[in-house]
Image (tube, rainbow, N blue to C red; front, side, top):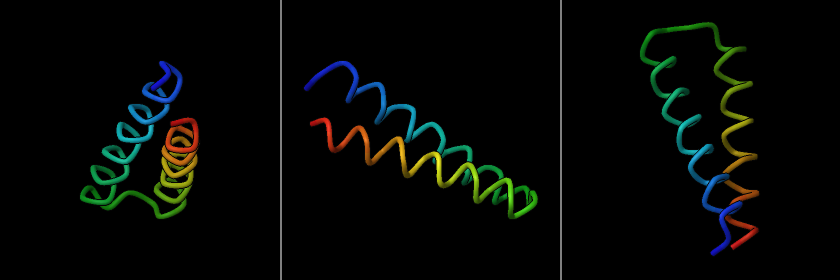
Length: 50
């Protein structure tokens, strides 16, 4: 496992936590969608680097 993969997975999980938090606070759906897309992209990039 490379350091880049670990970093990307950690960033993806951090962003996913932000999505969950913003969802609970009833923030605008556009903000949540952009954050969710970033989270999925970071997680997928990290998993592909494994």
